[in-house]
Length: 564
Image 1: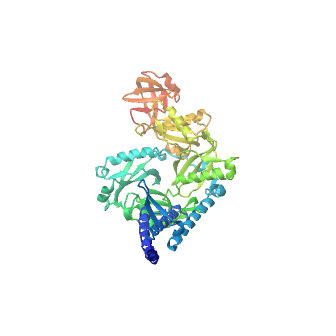
Image 2: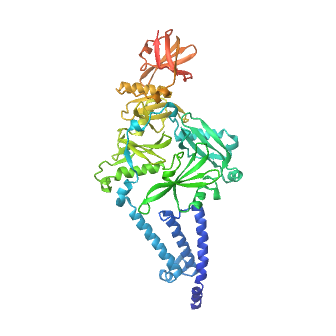
Image 3: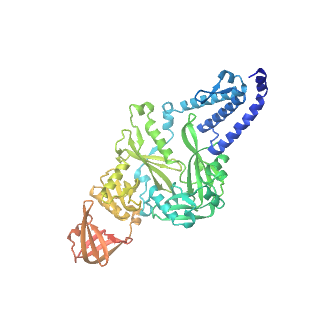
C-alpha cells in the first residue's frame, strides 16, 4: 500500500470506528434479543456477550484498516495474515483488545475465588439444616390426601385427556412440566399447553393458550381447565410475548433460575420465576433471593424478595438447588480436606427425590447416605420449596431404590413397577409408600415398606387393604401401630354380608393362601394370614364377612370372617 493510501486510512479511521461500532451494536442487539443474557457482573453469560462484541468490533476494524491480508495457498485454501504489532498501533483496536484482556482476567480471577477448595465452608453454609423429630414434624396423612400418581403417569393421563378434545388436540401440545403444587388443600399436578408449531401459533396467537391441565394426584381425575381469557405469555409464544423475553426486557439485570407454572387458589395461571444471586466469590454459590410472579394472561409482573413471596406459591427453590446445597453441606461442613481424606461425618443425597404436601406447602424429600455408597440410608431431609426450611431426620433404613425393588418383588408375577417412594407417617412409622403400575402406567396396587425394618413390606389392591396389611405386619414384628384421630376418620366404614358359600377357590399369593368364595352373585377374597378361620371354610358354609362400604368390583376383599 502506498504512503498516500496509508495516510488516507489513518485520516479515515474515525469514520471506520463509527461505522464498525454501529454494525457491532446492531449485531449485539440481535444477539441480545435472541440469547437474552442478563446484564449482571455475576453472570458468566454477560462476560461472553461483552467479549463477543469486542471480538466483532476488532475484526471489523482490522478489515477496515487493512491490517489483515489474505493470500491463497497452492491447494486453494485461504490464509489470513495478521501483524499483531501493526494492529496494536491503532488506538481503535488497541483499546478494545485491552478491554477484552481485562474481562478475561476478571473471569479467571472470579472463577478462582469461587472455587470449592478455597471456599468449602462458605458452600457448606448455603443451607441451614436443623434436626427434626419425625413423629412431631410429619403428620399422619389421611387416605384422601395420599398422592397416587408420579410425573410419568401424570404425563400419560394428560396426553390422553387432550386427545379427547377435538378442538385442541390439532392445535396444541401438552408440556411435560407437570409441577406438583397444593391447590385448595389437595396435592395436584399442573401443566400448560404449547403451540403445536409456528403456523398454529399464527392461527391462535390472538386468543392465546385456551386452557391448562390439572390432575388430582389422589383421585387421578384429569381436568382440562378452560380459561375465560387465554394465556398470552408462555415459553412457546414468540417475540415480546415469549416468557423469558418479557422477563428479560423488564428485568435486564436479574439472574433467573427456575421458572414454574402454578395456579393460585382461584385457579388463575401464573409463572413463578426464581431470581438468584451468586453468594460466593463472583460466580459461585447460587441462591434464591426473590421471585418474579408474572400473570400468564396479562403479562403483568411483580418482584418479591424471597421472604415476601405469597403463601399460595409452592415452588421458589428448585429441588435440584436444594439437593445441591445439601450435598455441599454434607460434604464440606468438616472442611474440604476432610471431604477428601478423613471423610468424618461426610454425607450425600441419594439418587432421586420426591415431594410431600404438608401444611399447605410442598416439601422436597430425599434420602441421605454415607459417601461409601452403600444401599442404605443414614437418614433423610425434608425441605420447604417456598422458604428453604430444612430438617434432617436421623432414621437409618433402606435406600429408596432398594425399597422399590422390595415392593416390586412382592408382585413380580404381575410385572408391576413401583413409583419412586413417598415418605409418609403411617401408623406412627416412617414408611415408604409406592403405587404399583402396569405397562400402561395405570395404578393397579399399592405398597408400604417400613423405612427402618425394610423386610416389612405390605401390598394391597386398595389403600385400606394395604394399610390393614401393613398394620398387621407391624404387629407381627412387635411394633404397635399408632391410631390418631385423623387416621380414624380416614378409615372407611365397613358393612357385613352374610350368606352360604356357593363356590370356593384358592391360590397362593406372595406366600399366603388366599380364598375366593361366592355369595349370591358376588365374589369375595380373604387371606388365611389375615383370618385363620378361612381354612375351615367349604362350600355350603354359612358365613358372616366384613367388607369396606366403599369397595366394589368383581372381587371384594374381606377384612374379617366368621363361620357359623
